[in-house]
Length: 193
Image 1 (cartoon, rainbow, N blue to C red):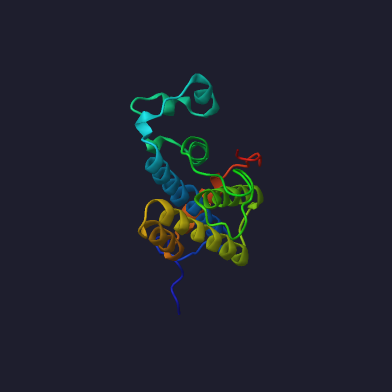
Image 2: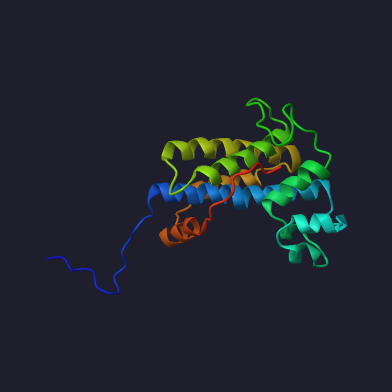
């Protein structure tokens, strides 16, 4: 006869795969891509040399962050970093222009950056309660390719490629994934430019 689970028994429970997929893709975009954008920005501009006028400070939600001295690259969000990359770093826009979907075969730095931001918007606007395995694989492959291309353009090496591969293979704890996805708030799905 098997023992019923007591109050201190460890029960293995795995998150629904659709929720896990949202967690992985969100982490890919909001953490790995964000760090890559920050590193790319630092390649082009010394963050301590950036000065913000009052209009710029009002455009950022948390004025408290950018008004501190000294300002550091860790204080900026993905969208803010994207706008700095596109407007202040001298990166040539791709054929279709900043903020528009690049051609599939365009491997330029601007195209890779824009594809990641467009993917971010599509994920935020369409992911309610999960992400199917096929949609997840498609998004993952596209983002991974663009992350690798950005890393090759700017930094060199395979640090970000390894981070992406590690994220895909790491076990996800159910409670972390559920809490993360549960805290995602609905977003007004406007263009990010």
